[in-house]
Image 1 (cartoon, rainbow, N blue to C red):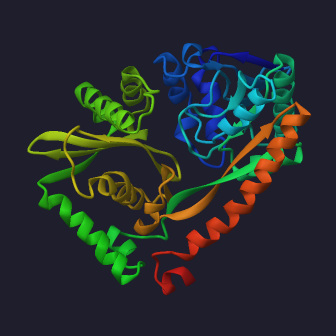
Image 2 (tube, rainbow, N blue to C red):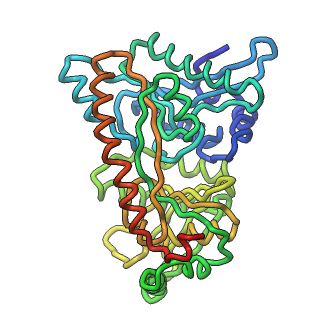
Length: 386
C-alpha cells in the first residue's frame, strides 16, 4: 500500500527503523531532521517545498517496508543538482516545468538512501515497487519531471535499470586511513602540503582565536541565534536566499543532540565564526558555516570547516568526512574527488531527448575532470600505494 503525507503522519519509530536498517545511518534522513525542516517552516509549500512523502506497507500487517522523502517543488532552489537550463528549454518549448517532484533531503547535498527499504528477501521487490510508484505519481499529477538527487550508487544503478536518466557530479571527501591523530594524517601528505597545513593551523592561535567543538545538546539558545546570524551573513555575501529559519537550528539542537556538532571560533570571549556538522555512523558531514560581519580571519574557514571535522572523524574512528558541495580548494587539504549521483524521469519525449543530449555532453566532461583532479593529489607516493 502507498500513501502521501506530511512527515508527522508517520511515527518517528517507524521511519527511523527504516533509516537504521540501511548500511549506514545517515542523520539527514532521520525523522527529527526532516520533521524539523517542515515544522520550522523551512521546507513547506509556502516556500515551494510541498511534502509528498511516499510509503510502502505490507497489505496484511501494515508494516512499513519502504519510504521515500519526496517534495512537490515550484522552483529549483536548494537542490545542488542544477537543472535551470532544463527549465529554460522547457519554457522555450512552451511547456511547463514547474511544479516538479524531488526525492531528496532539502538543502542538503549529501549522498544517502532515497529509497528506504527494509532489508530482507523482499527488498529488491519493494525497491522496484517504490520506484514505480514514484513514476506513477509523476504521471498522475501530470508534472514535468521526477528527480532523485544524491541517492546511493546502488540506488542510482537500480533506477537506471528502470529507465531513469542518470547524472553524476563531483564532491570532495576526506578518507580516514586508520589515522590515530591529525599528525598521523599529515604524515601521509607531501612535505610542502604538510608544512602549509601546519602553518594554516598555527595562524589561528596567532590571531588570538580559540576553536572548540560543541555537541548539539550543549549548544545554548543564544549560540544558535548567533549561528543563524552568521548563516544569514554568508547567504547575503553570496547573493543567495536564506532557506533555513531561526527555529530550525533550535529544533536541530534539541531533537538531534549529540548527532549535531557545532565548531565554534572565539576571540576574546566573543564567538566570531561557527560551522555546523552532523555525525552519522560512518561520516562527519560538514554543512553550514558563517562568521561575524565586517571582520576577516586568515585561514579560519579551513580550520573550522575542514580540519576540525577531520580531527572529530579520527577521534571517533569514522571512515570519512564529507564537507559539502563544490570547492576544489579542498584538494589541497587532503580531500579527494568522489562521484555524486542523481536520477531523472521526464515523461515528455521531447524533453527526455534534450536532457539525454545534455547529460551525454556533461558526462563526457565529468569523468576526465575527476581523473585530472585525482592526479593532483597532495598525498605522497607511499600513501597512495597503500
